[in-house]
Image (cartoon, rainbow, N blue to C red; front, side, top):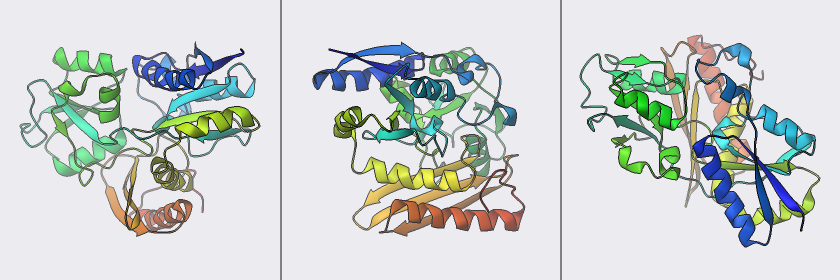
Length: 305
């Protein structure tokens, strides 16, 4: 049997996600090997990303390996995937989503409301920074990079009073007990695709695409599609300080967004409900955000006119 080569980053979280997919493919009769690929994002893990780092810093090398036929399948965190991808590649499946919310982890279990004025919260995300300061402007937000273990260690070493992370990563690494508070989406809109996985392969690999279709989740896929449509319409890069979360209910999709200024001083919030195609809902919300951004002077570099 030909071994299916699954490309992934080498972090503990990436490997856990890739192994979850590999286990399900094994159950379907596939032989799977994990190929670890070091990405630009891994190489610059000790500094904040700059605009010159470009889009897809955690996926570009993996996509190139797919295009070159060096691997057959890639497993990404959906929030790392740029809004657009080469036509030779496709999303073959979007499995059921983990909890998409952001969480607060503090040394003593304190919640956001418990933290005293001047307390230091660690995050490298402009999206998180802007929304945290909107709720608690008297707090201090300090840059923080590194994988989950590194961030938790920096918290324990006293560099921060609390740190802000994605719930999904802590859940997948069996670290949910470290969570001090789940931040409500009304306060903190998650990143596009947060908590979801992206199973990416070559568009012409119809046999593998058919096998992966069994891992697709009927509720997660349209939700992520709507979120990614907003991202693509507003510029397509994961560096945009944008939060979008779509949820599926009896009345269709509810799409909630928070767009932040690059300096983190302004946050525009909007919510849209719809029963039509997720792409149409995403485009409509993106247009509303684009209009409001122009009115208040937020410049969306690279966004579509």
